[in-house]
Image (cartoon, rainbow, N blue to C red):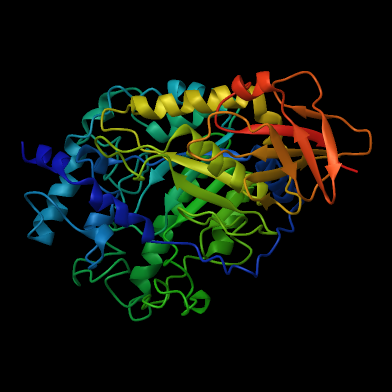
Length: 480
């Protein structure tokens, strides 16, 4: 009964969590991979544009922030709620005991994959382990996992949920990836019980106790090796918890990095080498640790103001929370499509996150949003997938993409606009002389004219009131 009290937590608690690890936009020292197989996969990933992340674990049972309520920091996203909140030790014990009740019997990854595919998603990340250390895969390194006998779902033939998710999406043609947390707050060699943890970092000085830190490195390497050798084809290793990093890489100008007290080098060269031996061309995303093991950059809950010249991905929640929250508020279909077009026009990819509930289901509203995105993609997908950015990228409510010599100008209406305007102005990009301009979803060419330095495209009245789709409209033309 006490666990149910957590479902009453106010949604305001979850609005704080997005600041836990923001990616600085000042990542200017991007290093392109030298391995031709990695470069090839990176280009394929850039073509795919739209990905799905699934943040899911025992924390879903209480409907709370993923892992962060365990962290003994005085931050909004770390606040504890419920009957155990007053005592951190009792809270941690109750939290870890969720393993004995977490039982996602309605888990259906094939349904997730089918809905995401229809909506245009082309790659995905499965949550293997978050910071709390609970493994959503059948590791041999710990019994704190969904396949252990203490977990009721262990008796289900689908209990190795990470393997099931990867297979379901892979079978549906997705590029697949694994989300893995470098820190592990359950591991005795990260939060050593001899020293109570003070924050998100190891509870001991890693230089003073190198043997213990080496045990943690070995533990982490083994878990990643399991995921990259026993789970079929994996395209992306997406590593979270950027405070686990070599001390020399800390950027003291970034607030959350200047509080890292110890070297936390886990030997990324060794990990990447192992990963690519098992998975040739593997993309490695060591988030926020600039260098050769951050194959693409991942701004969190934000879109860069300007075009970025290196590979990047905005990771954004479909609702307000990464993890499942009862009665979460989801972004509107128009907002989601606007975000996608803005990201793609600036040269990036978008990965949208959905948090399944403790029974293993995705909220009906999330499915409705996927359906709305599917309807839009039926008309406009060619303006998104396989495209690249083109200057000026964004102009007012226009977002530009290109494919070979074809230019797409995506008109992003305001919240209250229901009809296409009678005229759309193109301030910078112009069609070829005597070229034709089309509206995707409408077969006849549109009238256009030059007016000084700009071009004006006329939209027929019948189209203004009955557009081929909702939420955004795309002009297609060949530029001169």
